[in-house]
Image (cartoon, rainbow, N blue to C red; front, side, top):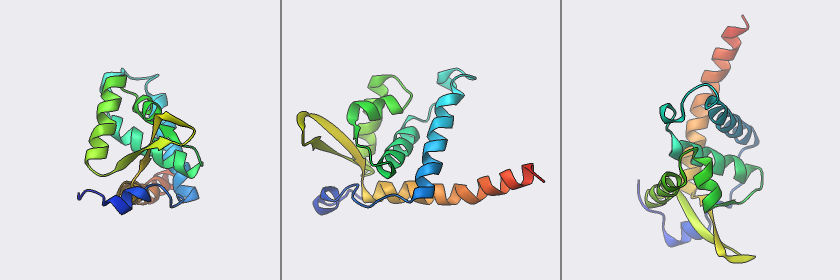
Length: 138
C-alpha cells in the first residue's frame, strides 16, 4: 500500500464516516472487547484491527482519539498497542496530529486509505452478518 502524500495526510480524517458502518464498527469493537470475558486474551490477538475499528467508529461519533487511547483500544499491552499504531502509521493507514489545545498530546486518525480499507471490510461483512442473522430467525 503506498504511503499517503503530505496533502492526503493534511486532510486525514475529514470525511465523515457512514452512520450504519459507524454503528457496525462500534458493535464489532465492543463485541471484541467482551470476548475477553470468555477467552484468555492471548487467544484473541487482533490489536491492529481493534485500533482501526475504534478509530473508524470514533470518527463517526465525532470523537478524537489520542495515541494512548488508540493503544489501549488494541486490547493488548500498552507497548504492543503503541507498536501497532506505529505499524499502521508506517503502512499509511493512520496519521498522527497534535491536539490544538494541548501540544504535548497527539491524536491519531485514519488516513483516507485507512478509512477506505475499513469501510470496504465493513461493507463486505455487513451482508454476511445479515444473511446469518436472517437464517438464524428462519
